[in-house]
Length: 297
Image (cartoon, rainbow, N blue to C red; front, side):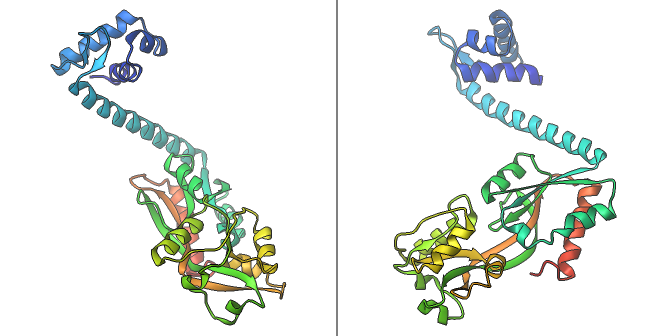
């Protein structure tokens, strides 16, 4: 059973019509029917029930289609691996980064790495948390700085560990506390960056598990706006340490940690994927920075 014939079968299965599937392949309807008959003979099982004039998959056909999907995925992964080998020879590393991570990772990391490895070019893109995971999963990136919770299909070396912070007006009673507990949010408006980011969704799960209900809250991807809302006294805003420090000159607003809601990130790549020599060097470079205290845990 060769890959081409298996793909012919998959197209016929998906279209429920040999003539339409033949147009998409493209091949003549007679040629497609011949390929299917040859496959049925090889497997010694009927793949379609043609007794009513329609191409209805049999139980054998349904099982073979699952195999065909696995084969498609294997071929995609093989092509991605080959692309990785080609890029490693060309000296290009594609890095994804969840938005916010580069506020902690020293900007010099890429320049310093390329100074040490002048034949390597690092291409970086900053995008929202779940999209970063998705693109790493799909092979768009070679490696990525991903946020906790880390996806099970990734190998991740954690580089940084902290908690989220809560912005509030300095006159808010919570400003007298060293830290904010989930229960402190009962009935309060809490503005955050939205469901594209893991912190927002982890907070929602935490609130639900503790039975805590927020007041009227809004979402915005603009950290300046979240900071402003906290200053107006119209609720609290979710942030992270380096953003709180960036806006630290405004004495009308303060920030307190929320230890129950982690903010952690690591360097990830897909499990089972062999890293190139350049990628291993980049990972080691980041870990050395962490050990030297430039990226504290």
